[in-house]
Image 1 (cartoon, rainbow over the protein chains, first blue to last red):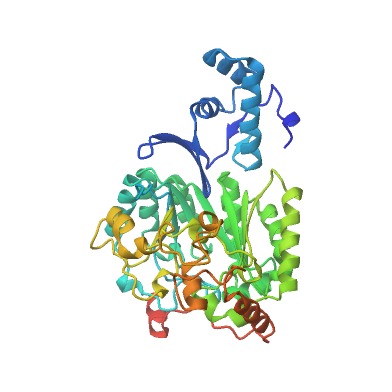
Image 2 (image 1 turned 60 degrees about the horizontal axis):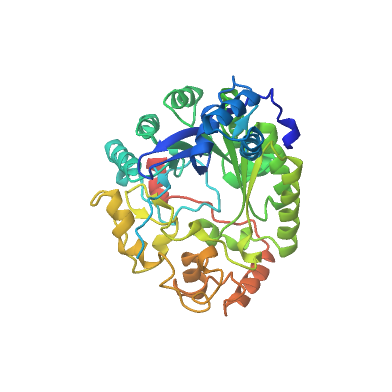
Length: 94
Length: 369
């Protein structure tokens, strides 16, 4: 997928079999998927917790820009980079 | 020494019983039968302990895990204690009812083996008539639920001309992921090497064709491609390092760094029937023998790749160099590397076909399968 396929209207969600878990042993959040896991930093967790298939990308970005009091364009770039990567790994649906 | 990080994955070999008899099976040549297998309660205790020490993925494997009558109970328990559950199956032995119950119990992912993209050849390789058709059925069940499906295909001389076709086939089955694994020569595959080894030209052609599918199917299927060892320049990072991330539990409860670790003589591995899983993982002498890089000899010791491929595979070093602490001869820096080319050339020119099918001891097979 190219970044252009991901629009403000896209409603991202984690595919079945891909899920967030707070790992009590490592004291961090991880994303579990077939044969893979990713350690997540705070902002990645915030992004993925909002990817529920209902919220459009534009609203997710607005929400995070407000929460982090950050430049919307910078937030949008981070969100897109994470989501495009997960889409290509077959972990994310739109 | 740095504290040992928690393990991320456990391969639970629930049983060695299997209706198929693939000649490249990674199980050992001598396999314990049903009578020696761990009980339901013993396995449940291990899954609980695994979750406690930080294991994330539980791979329910075998043999064929559906040969265990308590597969549902074990899967449900593994899911309940928070493990990501992956069923590694041939598909044979699964019924729709059992599959639906496994899904309801929290099964996360199915990894389905295929032996070839063509039914006749597939059933001949697996030694089970009707196996191919059964796999199509199981893939359909998985696809209908929307849960992730991985197709696993082991590549060797008998199917190598269709390696890339198997990727196409997996896409048609609705798989999200495919493992194209060029045969690794351990267990039954090592015994049958002369019947399985492709030529270098065949390997290179198949490898390139599969790689070309990556761009074609980007965003549709993830391709995990295990390179052909004997035609490589550097060794694989076997198990991502000995005792570094994952472990196997055998049907009788022994905890090992990999399938073949017991082929190395004089290594002491512990059993979960006698010790906790945490102790088996962190303190057993066999695990600690090849952790880190201290055990390495030259040329590994001074090699810039030593933290990348960990000296390759210990079991292969033993099998081919006669010394488990030697550099894996697959590495072009090994003084014995020339042997690899010689073995590959010799074995790939054998007539082939008369492989030894994977079997438990004959008497056992009648009573156990």
